Image 1 (cartoon, rainbow, N blue to C red):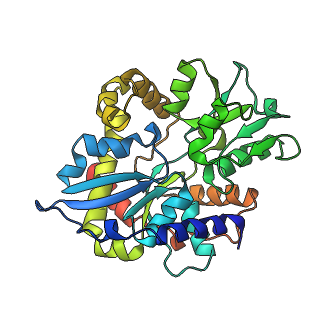
Image 2 (image 1 turned 30 degrees about the vertical axis):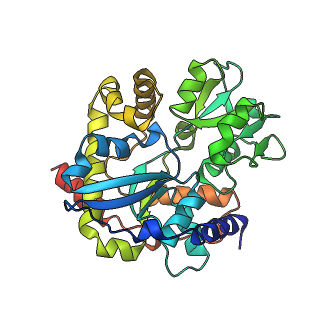
Length: 339
């Protein structure tokens, strides 16, 4: 069992001893709305279409009521799915791949993919208008949790530029994903990867400078996906389709609408963040082509993900896309909306 799988098992154990009362509540409201619990890997404008599907009333139109919790890492999201505390997990598909390779008989199925590249930005302490990846030589970088897609994607980029962790530079894996920004602000490392709106606000406050988009450098990869136990999907196919229909409509909306008009619909999900910051963050994600129009996963991107995990030394065996992914719901919904 590799280190990443051990971390997942530890997180699962912690989740199992948590009372199951929340998971035992009825899954529908008195007015017939389906209640769906979603555990997201982190909270970011990178996931704007998910929040827009709620704020624009697309979920309500499908008789769906969502509740969001922040897992603070893909291992915690997966533990919540496996324990039954969450209906839908929203994180990188590598979490399901680790469960598959661990020999589990209850591997969650990926039924939708929202983001198609890394959504983080590399932040430096100093302005670097002519930044090159080779400039990281001799530096320390906070890039995420060991075995997580953010860290592995970053390692993949470094390899493409002839840089090796522990030899040419140091990747700091000791800080939890959701604590990286505060650690960086406290003086840890020379660079830190951040998602928007955090990166935008950090830069606007003069605390650091965005020097590169990790997603642009890495290429397309199934970065953040919707997944659930196959048993739950089979019992709730109507709601799976409705869920994906709402999110697909939200992707269409954000891609076709000026970012300044999108921002007001996100304010309830980002307390204390200005509309200016939200609009800038949405625009930056649109500029890097962050979201899938059809929420299915391509085989090429799935194989690139495995290349990235393999490069990081975290892949015990390669899997076929059919072992983890069911694209049928996303494909059906896409055909309905884009007739």
